[in-house]
Length: 181
Image (cartoon, rainbow, N blue to C red; front, side, top):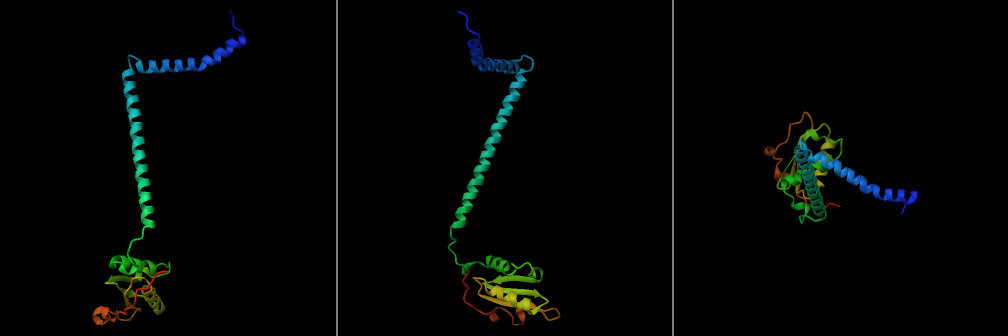
């Protein structure tokens, strides 16, 4: 008929979460069903929840685009292009020659102009050292896909050579394309 004190405490502890949940539900209900401000509070809560879902959806789409781009890049990296270095078009070959020639931080990037016409590399500009001129011409010849090199580089005080003065393509040394290692 009467419960012992320990069993009453045990039953009270078992009911505590239910009582707390009922209390929270009552407070939430009063907050949203208040006749004066409940309608506005419900609208604000609905808008915030909708905004949360929109943000999460946009974030998921952004992550999916990133993952797709990452996967596409990985596939492109491992897929061979199917072209030999000798088959590069002139702008691509020019970029490759420049990157090889000017790899050294001490290379005179501002004193040399590189252009490519039908696989022939034209080097123009003024450099203070004959050894630098020879090194740049040699490094251009070593690039895979280069058909020939026309070296129009000159020392300060010397007259600049040009294609019109007989230094054109006809004088380019033709060589077999070098194979990259």
